[in-house]
Length: 70
Image (cartoon, rainbow, N blue to C red):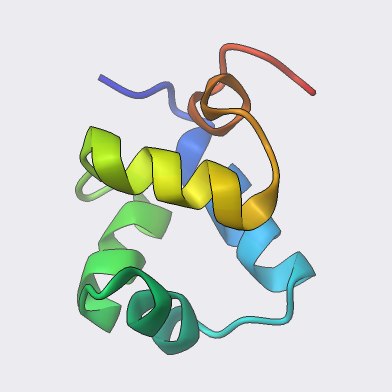
């Protein structure tokens, strides 16, 4: 289970890159509702998507899931 800060961190990183949810969804080949679900904590990405997110946003998976603050 991901830590509670994942939804907020994902949303902030997405906004910092000036991406809409639909833009991120297209990059990851998922639906906009999937991205929305991640950002509100309704569902969680799988490990492959976490890795893709960490590469896209140039942060560690540990940062994304709240194990590190850098």
